[in-house]
Image (cartoon, rainbow, N blue to C red; front, top):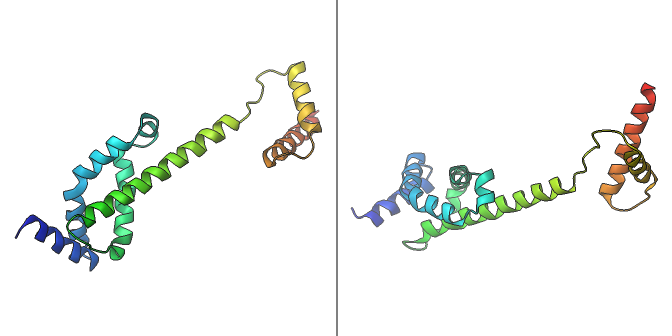
Length: 152
């Protein structure tokens, strides 16, 4: 039996629910998937998420969606795996950008109370309308002030 025939039989068995066949398929394609993940992950993404972590997400999706796979030729399965991997990379980058954006928007509380920090608090309390985050910051500032006053 040729390699392509063996792969085709594993694909057929995996689509029928044979987890062992799917495991064999993923093991056979793992080196190519890992190499693609390594090549397409930049340093910041690798710092948050290793290639094996990303591949674990890919494999989970493959296990869930193998029944939807349409065999359209010898390279179809590998291309399908690459498509899933590429989408997981996009999702991971977007998640990283969201996290970075949220961290950049955070305001640190002053370590020591000073006239500037009181003026800043007063400005926050007096701010009207604006963005949702500005309204939330104002509400948080009011809550913090009320908590402090309750302790006095």
